[in-house]
Length: 282
Image 1: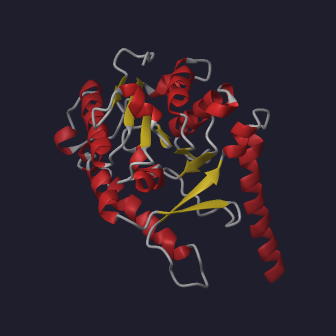
Image 2: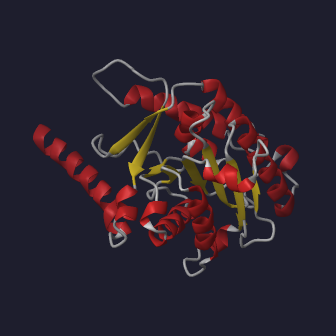
Image 3: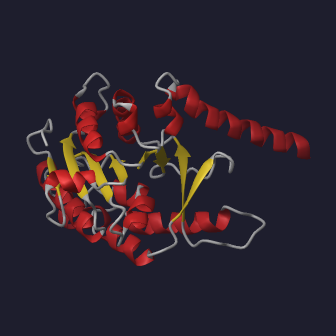
């Protein structure tokens, strides 16, 4: 596949021919950095794991060069970190039995530049070849600017693809801001109770992040467990791990729908519900 950056690549863990590997994809994750997919798109990874009918594919848009680092990684240059993180993402693709893994190799600055069409065009090429039924990406209330930029570039790409190439569902999932604040009626609740060992293995692969100073493995597993307990206040737990998502599908079904107004709707409904409850109980 012809991608924009010279170091961009398509990795196929089981050595299936590239075109065939991409075409078999049913669930796709589009993340910003190496390790984002294993956090935000785990519902898709889990649903496809061990299946011959469903396949998870991944796209990592940036090269992850600016990550925090200490310990054995403290003196690594950005170029050395790119190599390490790329290898970690490939290892995760092997452990998770991904259909394919696309590493687009963009610096964050390019992804955040809305006038640069290159990331959008790469996303269009890969998604048009894969045509997954479901896509998982970052939610648009995430506090990490590059995460939000990736989601915006993705929505742009999907809006430009023909209707038959768009997924039936687009979910914005959690990393740098939880979605427990959303009204329960607005949440998409994704049960990830099964195969905790797989979840731990995928997160644990990213030694450059864990030993480098960020315990994403513990934080991610802890959040999933906490949300399973705190999701329902008057019922016993029915899951041991939950991920919350906002449904972004309307934004690709109707290209004229304003993105900011759509997300503001979630926020306004939450604010109104909080105010209403206080007024009712005063």
